Amino acid sequence: MKRLEGKVAIITGAARGIGKATAILFAREGAKTVIVDVLRDEGEETTEYINLGIPGGTALFIQADVSEADDVKNMVETVIKKLGKIDILVNNAAIQPVGTILETDVNTWDRVMKVNLRSAFLCCKYVVPHMIKNKSGSIVNVASVLGLRGGDKIIAYATSKAGLIGFTKSLAEDLMPYNIRVNAVAPRAIDTQMFRAYRSEEELKKKVGRYLFGRLGRPEEVANAILFLASDEASYITGEVLVIGGYC
Ligand SMILES: NC(=O)c1ccc[n+]([C@@H]2O[C@H](COP(=O)([O-])OP(=O)(O)OC[C@H]3O[C@@H](n4cnc5c(N)ncnc54)[C@H](O)[C@@H]3O)[C@@H](O)[C@H]2O)c1
Image (cartoon, rainbow, N blue to C red; front, side):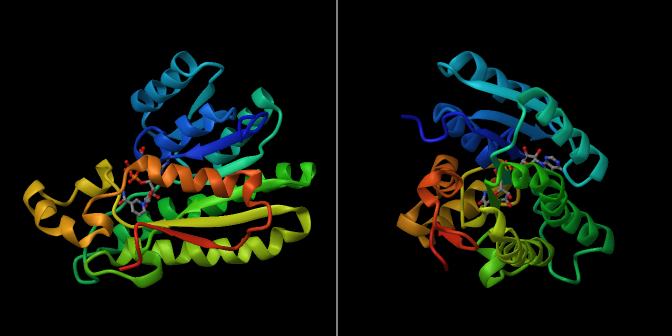
């Protein structure tokens, strides 16, 4: 028996990286997978990989900017029209500009809060009514270890992820009466374009010994944790944050 047989799952930011690995794993586990991203080419590529490369795999690509209310509303309406319900939502899309408070301008701060935090609020706002109708659902927010312990030269991103953790815990309380679970994962150093964007190969070689087991995590290792929290195997878990890759 596949672990997500018959489920419909929306994964934001699923064109590449952790979101892509999650969409592929969910499809392998029997979910009808909705890939939401601003990136059309990569999003369509991931969708095609699932539809053609995974036996029984079903994926739908919707191009949307999840920080915009109209895009999210239309995306959710399309999913309901085409797939009839929503069982799982993974809020994964994010951006990661670096900088201290002196280096971070007001527009960058606002953009990070919009893409990393408001997006989760919007997706939940429009998805939750459909989950309430079914009296079940599972939401997984992709936070970061930086949201738990902070970090240097990354003030806006770390703050947005701390906000996402607060959002996760409060939403879990609100949605308990409806049998909807809300959890978060907090990865540390995962080998994706986001992680490599502001670190040179040289810097990475110097630092890699500090990470858990002396290496970067793989997107698939985060996907496995998201799958557990999204699936019925975690039926008695809500409001939790699962750290992946060690705390410090
Ligand atoms: N890579 C790491 O080390 C690491 C560590 C901790 C947390 N995370 C979190 O994991 C998640 C995935 O990150 P990743 O490393 O795979 O990064 P990534 O940059 O490879 O993927 C992020 C995806 O989100 C999409 N996206 C960005 N803004 C969007 C928007 N407004 N609307 C729709 N899609 C949008 C991007 O196009 C991209 O496909 C993020 O929430 C990130 O903060 C990553």
